Length: 138
Image (cartoon, rainbow, N blue to C red; front, side, top):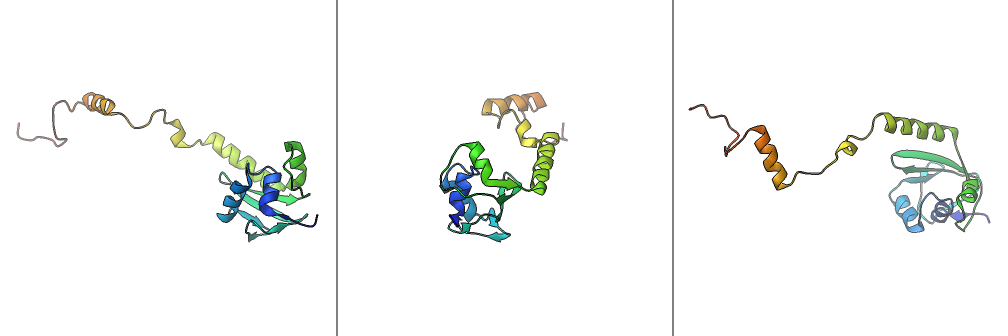
């Protein structure tokens, strides 16, 4: 086998769950072969360098084998080898996520309901006032 479509290879190497998802990511410009943006029909060969962005991290892998079939994960991992720079970048990104978590993840509840807003207003001491402005003429 000389070459294989990049979408099929990404699916077989288990980077994406379906070929459709792989095609969508390629169309969005998140996959490059040897530094060039590609289309889903572009052929990948052994020795090519594939860069793909997922979850804010760019993974760079070197193609070691081709397979048109999606097999188990240990077999799929033999189709590529991740570069040392890519491994270091992923480790740095994981540390950053661990030490500085996303602020939105700390929110336990969404927007308050109407009853919740009323309770908040009562707790802030607005009482029966219809305006938040300060009344000077008392």
